Amino acid sequence: MIRERRDSRCLRFGTWWRQVPLLGALLPRHAVWFGGLVLYGGANGFYAMSLLYAPLSLLAGVFTTLLVFNLGETIKKRGRGERNKV
Figure (spheres, rainbow, N blue to C red):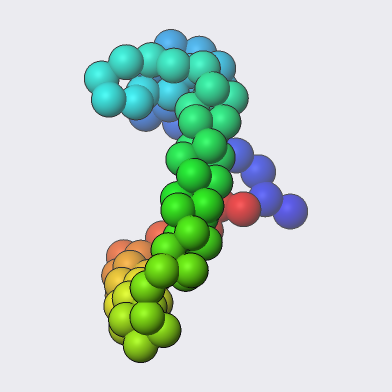
């Protein structure tokens, strides 16, 4: 079972579960999450529209580059001992 720790890093941003820092401002956690969801949805919509206009060979290279960068980030996190907090 995974439990969240209430450490001092979170407590210095006010109430540890209600607000998170984003670009120098304290914002509600759910607003930041929803903003990320909207940004992610917009990016996927843009990607889906680009599939109609770009040649498949170009998109294959872009997708492969994306996979390489994501894999590199995962390897770096594992090397530092970080785990996914899901």
